[in-house]
Length: 386
Image (cartoon, rainbow, N blue to C red; front, side):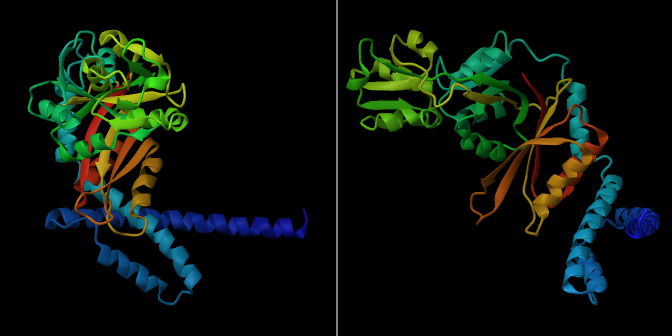
């Protein structure tokens, strides 16, 4: 071995000794954090104490140069996060969220129902109906004009379940549904999700040709998914309506022969329309994901996904620290969506979906910790995608 190799080995030996000392000190610090948690329990004190954390960093970095002070702050932000996690775990062993989840698991039947009263947005032939028929073998379907009306029917108990779209592989999220999930928080729960392949066609009165069409009606999502068609046919005016099936029904009932609808193959037969052009979507890989919502908190066995929504405090790294804990726990976030909060300047509600095969105690403890924060948190559901 040359001298440089020997020097490196000596350095590494000293690093090992330093690491051993750090482990001892870390374990002692965590033990003391437990004592602090017990004090806070007895005196009804919050876990998060920003003034105390700030004082620690300021005290120790007082004589450090700027570079080392920055490194120290990074280190201690992590240590504070871990310390808070331990304290929260001790203080939040039996929170209302934990009790609600336990109760939901105990009261939910073993099998998802084959038949139930279900509300879908639109009319007969809507894609929501297709999704509903994939979830239930014998659904008793009611139709609602709007997504809001569908949510209201479920929240009031008029229908046991509702099926609404939440995102499309080409055109992104259905933002209205995300906003309603926030508005109806704790009154609506996600109990299932399902993906449906979407094939859009241009429907008009039988015998009508493309060159004769002046206006097209459809839902905004369908219009976005078929944007290339409209780019290639700029002479056609676009009109947004509430639902693709509603658009087909309107065209069939109209006296005009120069209008068309972007809808489904099923609606062509259902409403006696001709197919002017097929598969209008920008890509063959076009799927819409639907959620099944319930007014009851149900968690069926083998549920592998968890939906949550939350806000974050106005601190540097607050979102990053929340997300990094999920990584540390060993679960995968498959979706993160933000929506502006109405009435608040540049404040956002975050929607996340977690892939977890089983709601482990460690994950449940962290969700309870998030629920106990002063910021807003909603547990949307624990469910399976079919």
